[in-house]
Length: 262
Image (cartoon, rainbow, N blue to C red; front, top):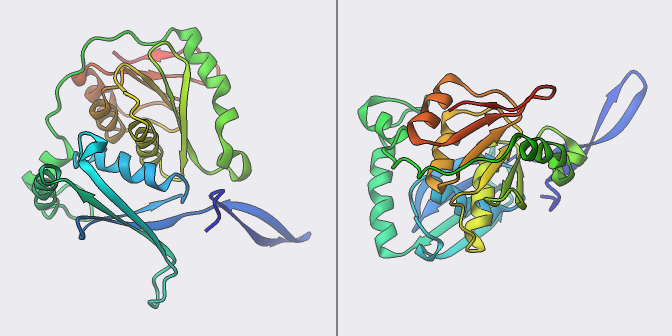
């Protein structure tokens, strides 16, 4: 795996053979205290940040001090049919392990569609506390963030085909940027970057390249961010969830003023 998150491959067309950089996509198997938890496809950059952010978004941890260690390894895939992949084992404190055990029991009721039965529904739509009323950014600040967004797309600048997520402090100043082939993963990486440096997400603002779905709303609410902005329009359920939790949801179109769904 390339540290840049891309790999150079060849393709042919009627003009001959050419080289191109494509974004990498690899499976990561996450376990909690040596118990299998999930397998997810990610772009292999900021891997530890992803694991931390994913654990927080899943409710496995509330703070990084509940993580005793993260053991990350690359497996070249000696087993037939299994590609090169990453394994990540989270070693949690006793309190976090007790919490994660309850979550893992509920996940057993989930089917491939992600929603199956009462337990799976409750797990997919957890009861989270509404956010404290906090101002969002001005339209001018959102437009400035949109204009600066591509400057931070290191992987996207090489290969494209990847989502980005940008974190800004309560005043709108840039803090962190994360990229991944999956929009949910990009947000988890961003959250993980902030948590791993003991930065508070409370009252901050996030801008993402993707459309907004309800899963992204829930991740943002867990992080207690004030605003979630997107360069593509949201789904109806995402709007309803944002209103329920008091999260500012903003769509910044390419050629129109920001649209606030509150």
